[in-house]
Image (cartoon, rainbow, N blue to C red; front, top):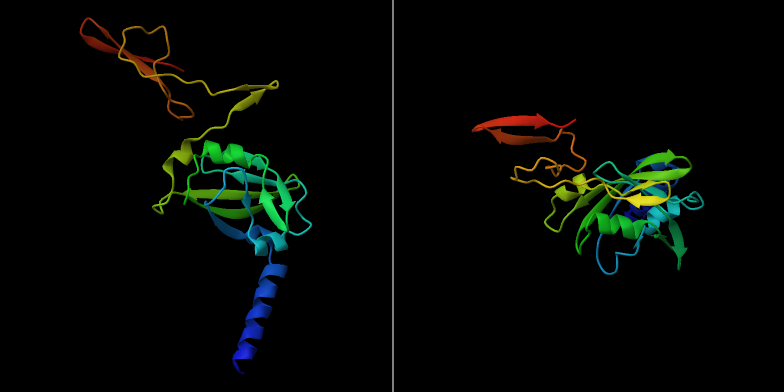
Length: 186
């Protein structure tokens, strides 16, 4: 079998892989370059695999565990992550040369869901992305997570922690007669 035979086999293998594999096994990455703040394209081979199956956009599960709803629009024969992407990019402080790795984990409520890993230009995961929380929408109003600030002040009438989304309970300490008294907050 000559070189052409090998090329034909590779084309057949790629066809089988792309056309017949379970979509929940799809993985791809995107390097943040150019004008990525408002939208990014899905690689053509991945977009072809989802052809006709994307009607409700994607759910992106960030390293923090938060899920972001992102619409997908076809622009000049490309599938672009659009509405919702800008909020995702801002919240995760995406910068030039950051790399995002997407892993499809199936469908949820008719939408494809992707786990997203975020790496900075050095090739390391962006640790800050593990601690990002979305704004909570309650009754149509947007509210930020409650935030507290550390203080050495004797005033205990105001919260004295900065633990947004932390699994640890906040605690304060107050000196009484030279001794430190701990006051746990529930």
